[in-house]
Length: 102
Length: 130
Image (tube, rainbow over all chains, first blue to last red; front, side, top):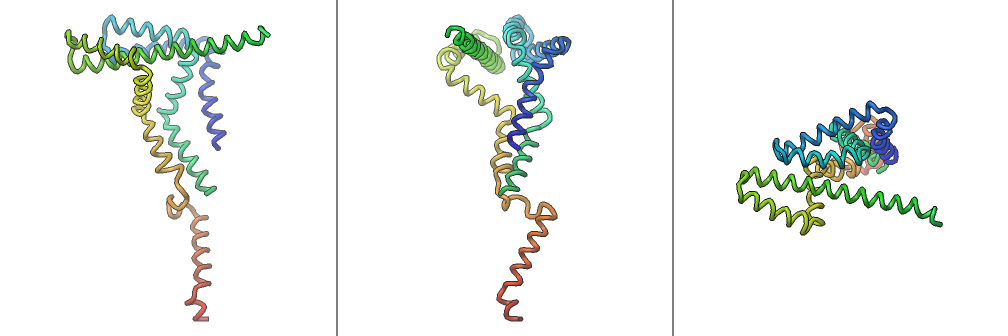
């Protein structure tokens, strides 16, 4: 059971880089989404202004240009886990499994 | 020999580069949190700027080994990791079967009935009545 969960998480984390490598359009779309996400996050912290633009630029260079695959992987991973409450399902499954064995 | 070591060195260098970059990104996020907190409370006056500079120096350069970890922990708690841990350790996963619902399905019910009947058959009152 735990092995299957681990494999599912691994596939979920590895899938975005593979999709980005295979489909250039998906690569561009994911990068644009990441840029928008970073800019909106920084603007939420600092408001509109030149400092927001500078910090957004630095973050975009590191997260979207230099380590894009890692960032996309983490973004999709946490997006899925947080949005669809996958952890609740996993904990429920582990509880069922331990209950049967105990 | 050198040809065997070179890929390993490249991997190590790449990892250290990645780690350094992510630490830098984390520092930027901590800096943004500090600026946002101080500007929210004090506005953008000279006192706020002095405080931003002082606290940023202390947090980012002085003791980042501590505040970086605290920031990551704080972010995880804000994203609801505490709820997951509570679910796992207290509500769902780690409970023994006795602590779960009394009768969860038909098989449980049948087993409980069977146990009760077996207990009833062997009780002293029944033996006396025979």
